[in-house]
Image (cartoon, rainbow, N blue to C red; front, side, top):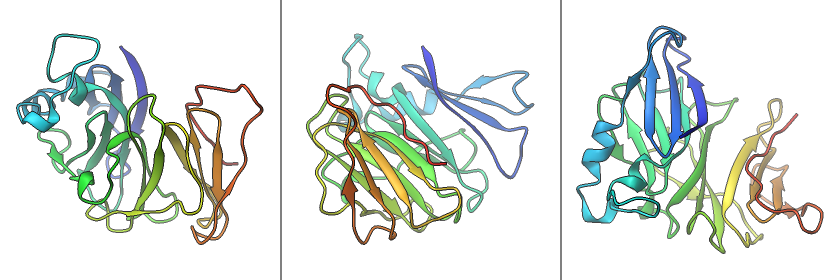
Length: 213
């Protein structure tokens, strides 16, 4: 088990969430002094055939607790978004229950590796969607209504590996960057109207994060 993301609820700063790989989600309501497991409702969702997945265990719900990222938006109090192997999931009651965002309605790729809230507009979310952990395709999607609907955001570029991470520039909302596992870095400086690729040095592999300064 490893921690893949820690986020603090902007409305209640003593509420902290942590995503665990492969172990679901935990939450603290006292600033990290104590923690509770929020994974039971995620495991329950895995009773649906299309949400069953196992790779490293004999548990059909493995894919639902394979947590990659968490995001909390100030635009929706009590809500958190979870990126897992099986897609994007949402809670509106601080983890007591979870529901499928249904990202497959908008994207043919549903494996989600990263999800972030724009630092400029809490209604705007970005999600990295791919085929699998080590796939040959990836994409970046954007929501402008706190995760209710999504559209593809990257244009004119091609990821040759899993899209692993996305970052929004802290001072310029028009600048967004994402990176694929195989060392490609993509960026837009005009709010998605155009994109360019800046590959990392030859031989670089297993990229996990992107940051903007």
